[in-house]
Length: 74
Image (cartoon, rainbow, N blue to C red; front, side):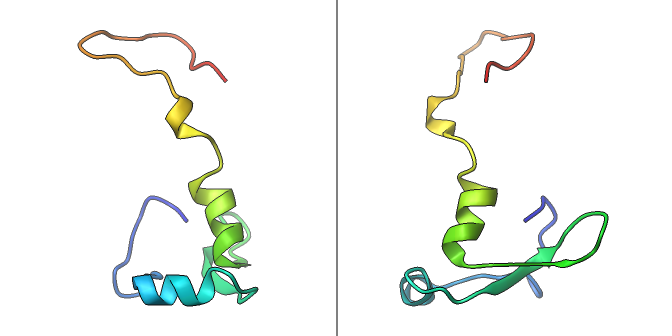
């Protein structure tokens, strides 16, 4: 859920695993919350909604060979 990845400890799913668990309510432990250290448990869909697809990144502003400074529009 954060930028650091530990290939030995972090979750990874095969396509078959993803297809098996994605439609279910099975909860996985994805890591620990900063500050409290409490485990973060969620279904695959809840995890994706909160940590992967929390914003529509396809609607972002981009440029080619031009700096866009200032605040990022919301």
